[in-house]
Image (cartoon, rainbow, N blue to C red; front, top):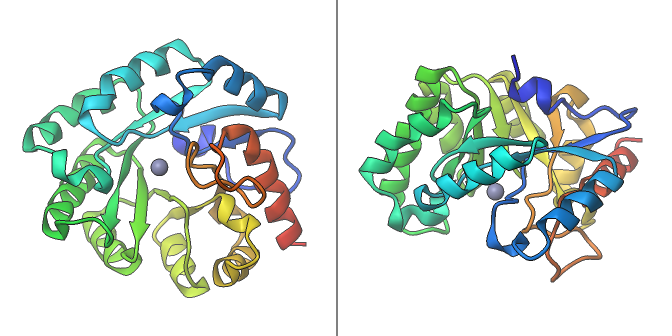
Length: 245
Ligand SMILES: [Zn+2]
């Protein structure tokens, strides 16, 4: 059986091929050159992609594209960025998409910079309970919300997933690892100014780390202002290796 852990293995400094465990390849940003972008990824040794969902209105197209590309794996979820448009009926519909071979529920989470935190909490908790009932891992988005999310996930019974774009202290990292989670490492590792997170990622056991890009967002150092793409997960890998040497 394909699982998040089998298809998106943890960081290994000796690995020769890479997987992008978080990239929004269904976004319109890639409509003009999706095949060329995937060919560049393949040429860089990146052979598998986890494409998380963010809003109900995009799930059908995400599924259609995911059916077309054998290298894509999917997650479906309601992202806090789109809180204003999420509806109760979206939660009723979500399990039907998840049951079509999705590897995780996501991208879900809490974001203190987005309005209506109460509504975010309702949708986050509802999606955690869907994940728990379907025995699926979760892909978590956080911003200024890591500790409250840890409490809610712990209470939900979900014990597997990825904290996407992890940033935080070693103690926070350890709390997520203790809960059975792995930490997503992307472009942040390439920025010297991200001192605290880099110091954390240098110490966390390799089994607790997984590589990602968040394409088309979160460009690496040297590519600011450009669209990010999964070929660069190979550069994230190099940066992480250098940090842990
Ligand atoms: Zn994302």
